[in-house]
Image 1 (cartoon, rainbow, N blue to C red):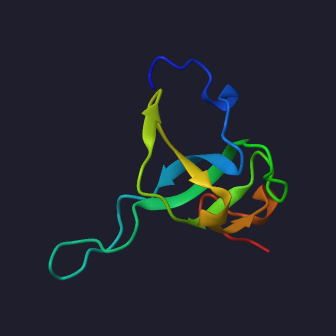
Image 2: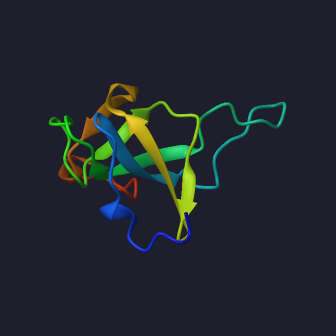
Length: 103
């Protein structure tokens, strides 16, 4: 995938969403056995939409999704996810990326 110049111009299959995945901060707490049972994804951002996906927009924030595969492109991690595997998304103006939540 490193040969793709602009991943946001990819042709996405009908009913799918291309998301850019952001990792959790590295200072998370590990379980006593030394493992981290949580997902490594903190959140994702919608990069491109396939036909038929009408309830999301580019730039929306995805907080809960299911996927077992992904790929890297130019140092970033992406996944192609079926719309029904995105369980919770919000508009970017309703999300504090830096955890500095202010009302």
